[in-house]
Length: 188
Image (cartoon, rainbow, N blue to C red; front, side):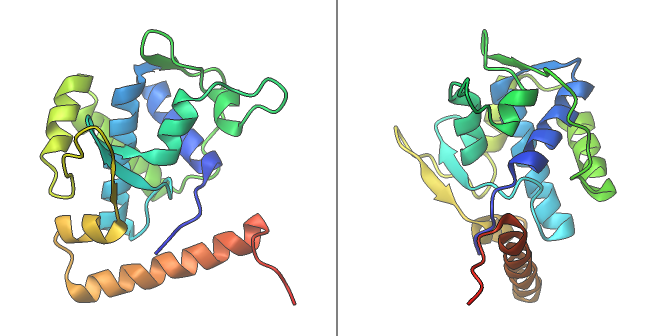
């Protein structure tokens, strides 16, 4: 059940959150809000927004590829989509540089982002760390990281076996579509 990471969509979701948070946010809080939004999207829509890989780290669940983008230095010769719109961290915060729009996000996804912002945006980053440490799919990794699978999340949000199977098919279908449009598919 591997999805293909969607940097454009993830950047648009992060930018959407940043716009609602006055254009600046602690990157730890941003990553928690994105994780909670993905978790809720899996619950409601059967697909995450970011299509990232998740890991348990010392400060809770993390979107792995997005975390790497935040913590990496942008390539000055070939800036990633993320770095075109979201700054490098400064003082543990990131800033919105430009508005990428929401063209990759569905109305249902922006509604989920709004709900996550309204519910959790008032929490500080450490309260969100505490909250996410109590999610059933989180495992304390010590000084390492432990993968969190979509299956772990489905179990944590109490999906039935029938619902899990429907979501597995939806994810496989979405991954197939993504591979065709991303050029990963080879024609014989």
